[in-house]
Image (cartoon, rainbow, N blue to C red):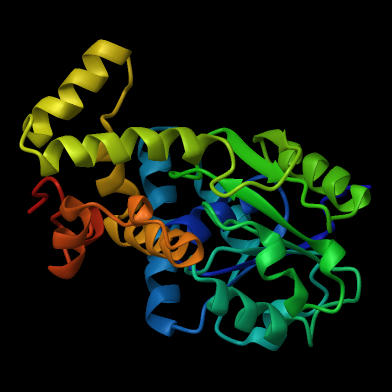
Length: 287
């Protein structure tokens, strides 16, 4: 049974982890945001404060509400402190299987026996790293969307190893933080939304590679022709070209199928460090 006294830990203070932690804290839970990097934690802390100040300036939050919200949000680089008494650990670290296994194995030493591990992986099914903990039945995919403070959808994935109790608990928890959960009944690479989105971005990148149309016109065509609020290449810039590259390379290593390799358009930008908005340049220039 869900109650607001449950202790929540979010691991990874990048854009997604920070906003997930904030969403949880905004809905009355005490949250510990963990990261190995003090610099990343300082950036996350600054973002949370600036976000509150913008809300206050718009009359959507007052100073007391800001103080109450921030009092529920702790930033720490101590994994033992982060894990202590955690009922749910939401993992939002890099989308690399080996990194997830290493992290889960370490934090599992310090969490309570029945802690749930919810991975925010965009593509990778939890059965690939669930064996890193003592109770694999407590590991599942709980996929938020960027920006997590705005997007309502969360995909919850029922792998064969996941207990029904864990699925029920996460459905109730996700609803309690103002999000809309959907159940993915079976594990599949990329789940639902990203499988559909990947088909679109793959074709968009192919059109770039072949010189069929400009980046701007491809996005414009999708927005005006299909009614999308953003074009596929704009979204890649927002979510991160590096993330897309890593995900596609992981899939290629699994399948060995040349069709699963990242496109030239992605590889060239990845090699130059042009990851999108985070690096000020991707398919578009953000300087």
